[in-house]
Image 1 (cartoon, rainbow, N blue to C red):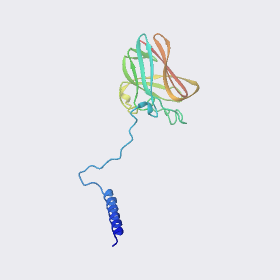
Image 2 (cartoon, rainbow, N blue to C red):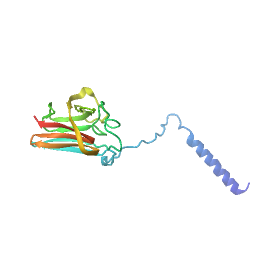
Image 3 (cartoon, one colour):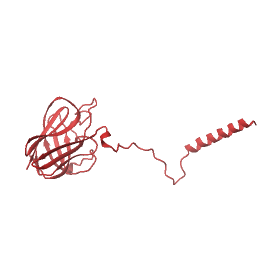
Image 4 (tube, one colour):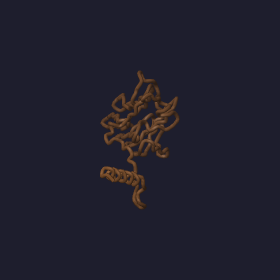
Length: 195
């Protein structure tokens, strides 16, 4: 057999053997390699819903909300986003957190100084702000048994559409501010004041 055919035959046999071996499961007792799952970006600012912070200081006491800010991207609030009559995480990613250095009155409900999670109950009519005592969880891990309060929010229209979900404080006096949430054409407010 000419030498070049012999080299070609050896190469073909090696290729077939390698392809066959690659398709065989590993020997029993050895772990199979798992496909790697995509990990969220370590830099949270590169997420599709980047982080946001709303802060206000009332008489030297700081109130902070940490949340994630999803975009509409052609979707609608009450439908694909924050569906009506279902508890919503009030943002995206990790649960939205409220930390207060002072005892507060939020919409008529007393909220002691400390850390909480904010959820919402969207509705075609009145939205409710849910203050929950569980903290540090992923935003979809909601435990109704941990609710401190459900508070009605005032609903109105924004002057122009808001593409990215936004939480802010609008200071009204030294000891009071409106907590404001805006998205699409919806503005929600609730009064926050020191006790």
